[in-house]
Image (tube, rainbow, N blue to C red; front, side, top):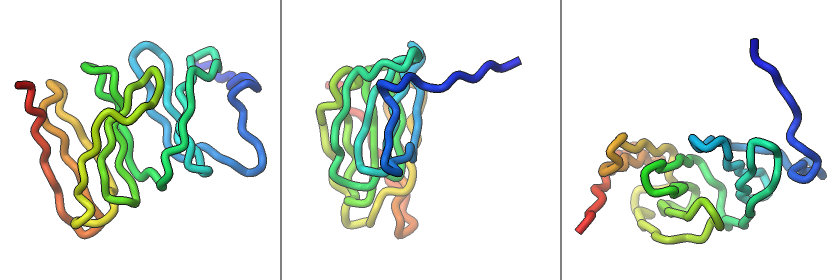
Length: 130
């Protein structure tokens, strides 16, 4: 049977700010995107590791386990790759011409990122390792 526990008060949000998206890392930490536009990396024990204001509404996010990176896409039409330990932006891919990003998918190797946009386009991005 599953056991549920509330996250410690140190990570609790108030004033109507709610979690909108969650992704979990294989080490047990997870990343929460909140309705106030903030991201927070939280341990499984409820400790806040870091937080950042993203400056846009995030529609999709995933973790690239291979490189310890968080990939987000949102209303501004850009894909952003952030480090998991401090949420700094490492790379931005601008695909604004296709509209807001609605979904993201990553292959397991992880060489290909598929990006879905609000105008119906799917973009495939290849990671150049050279």
